[in-house]
Length: 110
Image 1: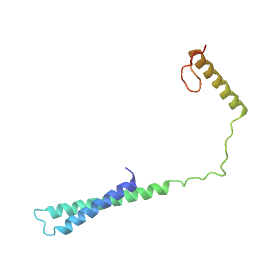
Image 2 (image 1 turned 45 degrees about the vertical axis):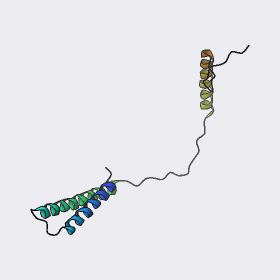
Image 3 (image 1 turned 180 degrees about the horizontal axis):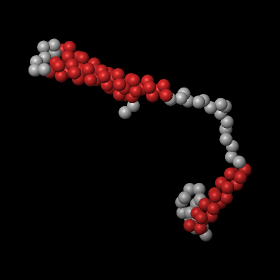
Image 4 (image 1 turned 120 degrees about the vertical axis):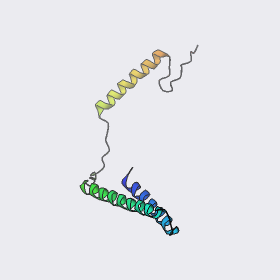
């Protein structure tokens, strides 16, 4: 799980526990202590996640922006190779009796 998502979920859990503790002030049988310790654990978990997030972002290098965007062009040799490959595909399709472009069977004409 990503750190930001974990922080959001932990914050929601903390608010829910706070609401439960506030709504039931006279909790018996040690339930108040249990809820209090759960809230303290959630707070510690949030601190841990934030410290890991801050230390990780400090170590990472900022992304490097590219200079000017250059459009790549196909070389003459590359164009020739593509042409040869296409001709081979068309010949194979023709041998199989298929249209090279659509892939449908060729109809026999009179």
